[in-house]
Length: 365
Image 1 (cartoon, rainbow, N blue to C red):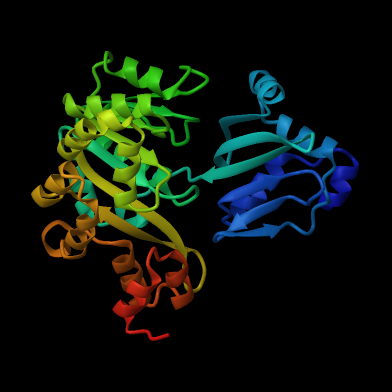
Image 2: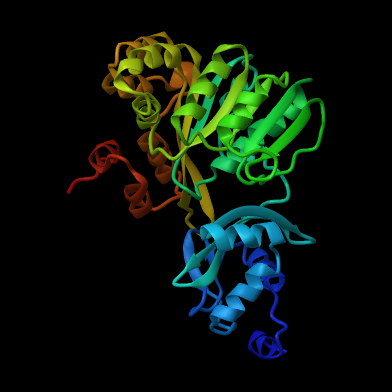
């Protein structure tokens, strides 16, 4: 029976579409009325042509089939809802269901069942050394869909396997599931276990943590408490939707009122341990490969943050590879291109400064 024949007998199931996505190694699945189901493979949307065009009733039935009554009510009241769920023999998914033009639609991000190693992610072992710090703030940044959650899961899993710590994660929603190993890991989900990131983070300081993961540092209050936690003896991991290490520092400072910014610069200069800004770039031959910018503050960079001279940080990152492992995004793209892993077109697309990249490559015009 074809998918079209199944839908005519009301047997088309979302689980079947998710299983198909797994076979295609897709990162995302999209369900929306007026279109056939679609998946994202290697960063590109592909329509599943052997499925029928979905009606509003069909898209709602498919999406409601994996939602709890609570999540359905939230969707109907607020127009959107985030949640996660697992499918046997397929894996876990992060979902966002939403209303568009009066119909229910959904985006489903597939989460690998196995947490990757640092080598599989594509980051250097230097990053794992950051996990040995006893306190401070480590940020993983980049646009949506660029592997930030996977990188954080790898780092938290390494700590879990290595140290006898208490780890608290605050997520919206919970994506990777951690089992207690050398550490105890408690995972709190926004909307299910606690109302907000700020509330959960404030409570975490009273729950005897060694390590805190903040799934997203969205607002002033969350950032303020995260900085306090990093300053008072905790190792804090967080994410921001920023494109470069320097713009990440700027974003954190600019969240605060002008009269507080000098104090925040001083505080950040002491607690910041690293910023990893990353992109997943289409790989020659299929798949995607990680390009990353890595900032690990040294004394000079900490002074520049305090003195609000961030424009000078970039040159230190360019020359800091040998000593600390720092590198810029263009240096990473240059290395990937020279290794034959990505095309020049892809290097240009993901470069924050194409003219600089071309000078590095010796490209004219």
